[in-house]
Image (cartoon, rainbow, N blue to C red; front, side, top):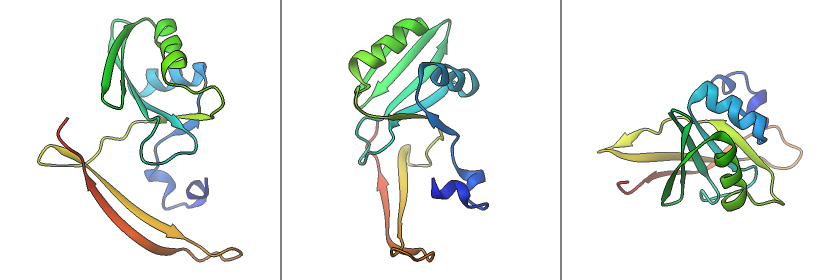
Amino acid sequence: MLMLQDKELVAHLPETQLFSENMLWQFVDKYKQVIVKPSRGSRGYGVIQLTSLGNDQYEIHAERTRKTIKGRKETYEYLLAYHIRKRKRYIVQQRIALATINGCPIDLRVMVQRKRNSSEWVVTGKLVKVANRG
């Protein structure tokens, strides 16, 4: 949440809220594609993309699987049954399209850290990942 306090960064961050059934459908109505993921996590574990296909149909893309479901109630119940862990907090985010190289998404990461009781941030690592096709 520290990034939300930076006036220069906040305009570039995806809209994010705590996951709930109501918030999920508000985001889907607004953005058509959303990301649902654990509020704490790494390496993309537990990340789910939900896309509205129109006609009350929704595509769930989690890891290497895609499933199309008809109906909001059915889609939400499927998420709870197969993807949402009961003891974890989740967030829902506006999906931001990734940049690509030769049709493969890229992910740029910059590790920044600060010492305890210091307000100065230091870049300690940079990484670019290129995904496989598909």
